[in-house]
Structure formats: structure tokens, C-alpha cells
Image (cartoon, rainbow, N blue to C red; front, side, top):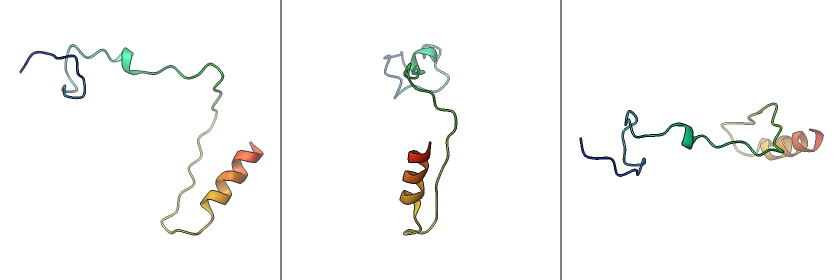
Length: 59
């Protein structure tokens, strides 16, 4: 195994030098996300954007 270059994109997941805490980004202080709703369809033209925008306006 080669020495650590501190470039975690080339490093293995079990690298002892990898600092896991530094990779976790803190949420914005004004962010209050309570629910995540996924609007998906295997077909186009079924109104996903309409449903998404109506949900955003009513939230």
C-alpha cells in the first residue's frame, strides 16, 4: 500500500488517515427540512413538474 497523499478520492474506504468527520457538511442554520418527497415516473409527460411545483407552493 502506498503512502497517503491526503487526496481521499484516490484513497480506499478503510484508509486510517481518512477523517470521516471532516466529510460531513453541517446543514445551513436556517434549514428546517422535515420531509423529503420523491416524485418519480418511468414515463415522461405525466405531470411530475406540476406535482412538484404544487407541493412546493402548498408547503
